[in-house]
Image (cartoon, rainbow, N blue to C red; front, side, top):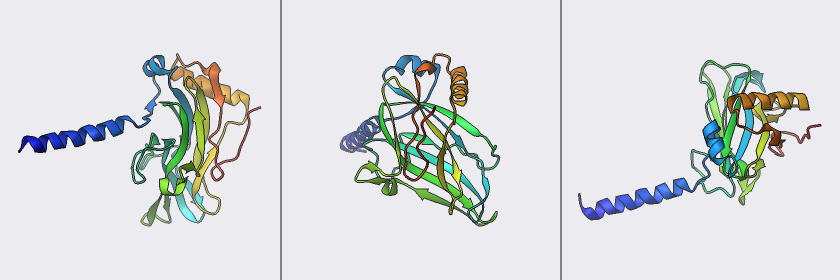
Length: 218
């Protein structure tokens, strides 16, 4: 193996590593990273239901499988399987009829919906997964599928996400409807990360023309 080949391979590796590191990677929120980067980055709170919804728009059941959001303007290729904020831990078999809460530490800025996977089954043997990506959700770099914003040092709640069955299985963004529920939700997040300053948390929903309606907390 020649030195020239080794140097060429190393250059490609360094190039790809630099590209990867330039992406706005999110990380699950912990006490450690909040203390270290909580003033420089933003915190995103959301909840997702991964259980199957039965008798859904003509299907036996449907299930949300993956949600992805890109920091905008997106630096990821159209066919990139990842996302800057990725939720993809839907159970394959055993699911629970409840929302799972998530908290992420992210680079500040605007994030657009970039990936959506929904599994739909007509029977136990007739199962398909609809995958929608950047080619559909971004039009001329505009987040056509919807977006949210988070600033440095901010904590934003962007909603509860689940399957909707109107006409066809689809994504829908729900929300907490009153201040008491919102405060209880924030208290649960603080139990996990005691350092989290929930007094700064904003009810700032993911906005979309397709996957949810606007709502302002009273």
